[in-house]
Amino acid sequence: VHCSDGWDRTTQVASLAQVLLDPFYRTCDGLRLLIEKDWVSFGHCFEERHFGAPGAQAPIFLQWLFCLAAVVQANPLKFEYTSEDLALLADLWLSGWSGTLCFDSEKERTEGRAAEQQVSIWSLWLQSRTASRPRNLFEGWATAPAELLLPATSLKQLSLWPWCMRFDESVISQSNVLSGIRREQSDIVWWLR
Image 1: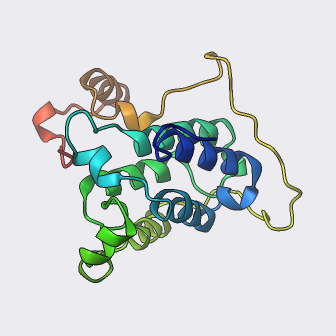
Image 2 (image 1 turned 45 degrees about the vertical axis):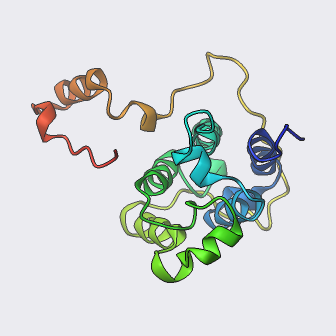
C-alpha cells in the first residue's frame, strides 16, 4: 500500500487492515499502539493536515476514525472500545489539549517538548473511558483464534457515525422531542471550534 507522499492513504489503509486482521488492535491498548506506530512514528503530518495551508488541510485521521467507527458499529462485540470511545478520541484530538497527535514529526514533537508540556492523549482517553463508560463485552482476544473482520460493502449495512451528526440542529431537536427535553440551541455547549 503506497500513495504519492506515503502518509495519508497508506496509513489509513494499513492501519484499518491491521484492525480487521488482528484482534489485538481491537483492544484499547492495541488501538493506542497502532496509532503511535502507524500514525505518530510513521510521520503523519497531523499539524499540516489539521491547521496547515488550505491546500494541505485534509481530515485524514478523522476519516480513518470514521471508517474504524463503522467497523466497530458493525461488530461491537469484537472490540474492547466502542464508537463512543472513538468519538471521545476525536474530540480530544480536535481540542488540541494534547501534544500526542499535534505535530508533523517526532523531531517537532521533541523540539516542542510535547511530552513535558502537554498531557498525553492516551492518559486522557483511557482515564475518561474507564471512569465514564462500561467496558464492552470483548474479552479473551489473546486466546481467541484470529478472526478476519470483513467490512460492510453495502450501503444498507452502513450507519453514519453518531459523532458526525451530534451538532446537527435537526438531529438535536429531534432527539430532544423524542426524549421529552425542550432546549434552545443556545444551551448546547459548543466547545469544539
